[in-house]
Length: 269
Ligand SMILES: [Zn+2]
Image (tube, rainbow, N blue to C red):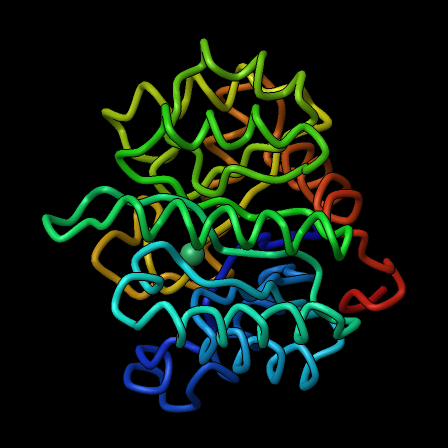
């Protein structure tokens, strides 16, 4: 079985803190579990730079470049504009495969919607100029996120760790978008992501860990890594009435297509 982890954060400090061999060890474990490709998502200028470094270190690791909605809030507008220019420059790197993770997050009390709209809109423009797809983070902000999606028909993207309903899937899919599923699809009482995973067209579904976050059952409470992705693939397969292997195969194929990855650069290609 060959597995593609379409969204992870191996530059997160928790890998250095909890694995003796740091992220190298977590990636080694993942390769032994069948992982052949990983997209390391940037979420700030700093983590975009570390994602690009990781992608330079491993042929089968790819990067995204972007500023997360929460990260757009705590700097001056002048500083944010400067960071956005640097993100656009980094987007020209050949291992940068998408603009992300960008979007809207209203979870915290200090949410500054106006600032989040500004950063999101500016990065959708970067995606339009560079021709790259986008990776969307949306938390407690689904309706506004869809407004941005439907008012930018030229841009294609993925809703990372999709938390919308199955009913919303058809119109988002019709707009050319992808849906990515992570650990929550394995949670026993999580009916919503299972129904959504069943509703997504076969050519639009991706699988991800969001490592070190969102570990799947039976690894809840542990540090997530791509080696745990088979559990998520099993739940996706169960929801769709296909095997874990078939779920791995379609999500690998879709990731190659979505991120425009040269299959020859994958591990054990
Ligand atoms: Zn993420």
